[in-house]
Image (cartoon, one colour):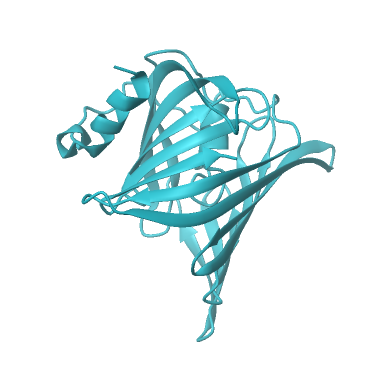
Amino acid sequence: MRLHSFLFASLLCTSALAQSPAPEKIVPGDARVDGSFIRSATNAWKMTGTSPGGRRTDGGIWKDRIEVLERNGKAIVRRTQADSGPEGTTTFVTETDRQSLTPIRAEVTTPSGMHRVLTFERDHVHVALTTPAKSEEKDIPIAQPVFDFNGGLFGLLVDGFPLKEGFSAAFPIFDPRSGVAWAHYTVVGRERVASGKGRKTDVWTVEVQDPVRVTRMLFSLTKEPPYVIRLQEIGDGVFWTFDMM
């Protein structure tokens, strides 16, 4: 059986949610985290959802632009993503230190008129939120520095972690409810996957368990542009695939 077929079944198995904690932890400042390989790149994925009954949904197109900028003598990764689906376009703009992948700022704008900016500090995250009904700002204390996963870095963050078959670790991410939550990632192994029309790419298959959005994801990652080749995700009972165009 092909590796990814086995993993599809694993993602859909609810009993797999009960896993033992990862034996290792990777935190901001860990020397094993290295984003120095990241260069400017663009990418786009076709999104398709499959319900438990087999009904398929066209989720639209997700576009990605990665830029490497210099600010105050340091290299900064600026990632802009546009999720264009049936309900409109949601835009993510994320900035992080290129070498350490420590977060700086994460901004999201949705079709409903919500605009949120996260500014990351060592002991808190500043939240500026604007909706059609109100505007507010607040600081959310964090017990320790965190990575930005759901703010927009997603699989590009994990691509900067150690990628070695069988390696597993927990890493702290921002949770707007509690400040800090621990996500887990496991490097499943190597695989060759479709990477656009008529192309295939050798990738690292990496599983991520996200406790904030309560999702399980399989990323197909490379250390070369465009980095995230494919994503398979299950949350709220719907299985989503992000296939590179």
